[in-house]
Image (cartoon, helix red, strand yellow):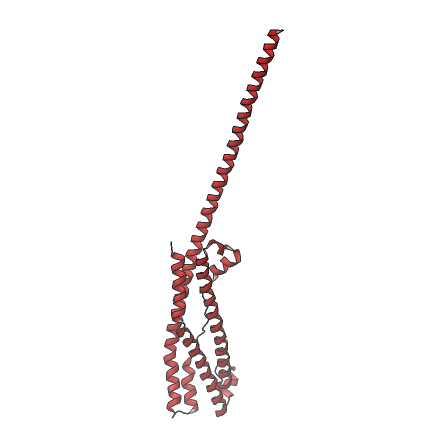
Length: 240
């Protein structure tokens, strides 16, 4: 009986020892799984971080390219309109000097020509950032610089487009009175203008010139403001 008792005690100890080993093994397995999950999450976060940094880098480059392109276009319009202002001034001087008949004035003003002033700054990247929500990739300072720059561009575009619509309307009216490429060949040959029509046509032609001068003055007066906003956006986006 005593031997049987000691055998039971031994078996019990062995059984408890085996359970302890299994318990330690199970805990070790759980710890390894948890560590694996944490490492996987860290790698995933790292990959997401890299993706966001890469996306931001691409967006920043595109924005900087757009700002550069818009600045070139702004300078282009100022130069274009500045050259045309010389021609407009010469027409105004002809009228001021007097001595020319209405027909002669009309012939002189007919060489004024027409140029479409459509201010269309590049905004595809900005629109993409807003529509996709990727604007969140940028810091608050960067977002402020981007928003302020494009709000200014929107104001410029709306102002210039409204003025351009009025200028085109004046041109249409001038052509209606002066019969400049508005009638077919037969009507043009047989069309007789009286002085009142020429006067009305010349008035609209001068109004058209005034509208173009307004656009030039607007761009020139806001030139410093535009480039200040452009430079600030540029420097903020290139800041390390």
